[in-house]
Length: 328
Image: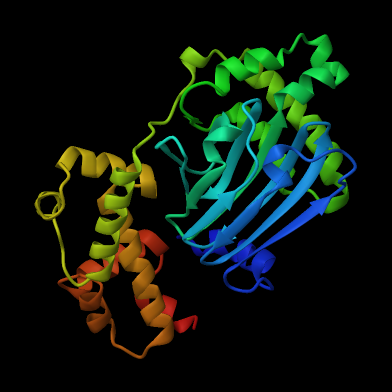
């Protein structure tokens, strides 16, 4: 995990006790969607959910977590559409129908509210920030904003596109980035009017999206992703050792191609790239928090020589270990 990705969340979530999810509601002048009427959330870290009533039947939530996972329970309706945009970190969403979707920065998931009434979010990098739009399509059809009505938007077509079948995970795009990015930078007083603008832009974009041409991310079964997390925990607990893909494949019931593919889907990087950065991050902690010499730290994080460690450290941090230590 990059330190710069964590710091803003530490500021936002710093006052929330461990094991707590703070839920705050703003402008509750319209009826809550089924998702947020009975929302319950638990986490092993800290989380915050800020909910805004945007239009009748449409709510938006800013969701931030510093945790490894969160469990959710909420109301469900067949006509509910949920759209989640991942801004930072990584998120895995294990849903009721046995599908697991993994999102990185900029990616989008679309699914019916019924898929995730009882669901688990996992955060492979320890944090995540995003925005969730919850839309009651029946309510939208009755109270459709004038711009959407004039454009000929049909909630029924949105239902057919995104609420039937398995959840969709769509690769980030420049168009979606233009829709969502401004929302994260706004002061509180400007959030609601911008949410009203952006959700209409989003729905129009999804309405004209040709689903057969979209860049869809591969869903995985929870058993696969859980096995990858076991492998991750094993290799990160034994940093002083090196394991090949073949050795890990023999140790765990997974073939080498699936191991490489699913690891990248869950953690966002090939296993070798991820482990190089993980080793360096651990070395950064040891340089800050201990008086161990650099050769000992290199060995502890899995480098045979101090020279190889120094080169890897420089590749990741763009400075030498000695320079980094002097800062602290």
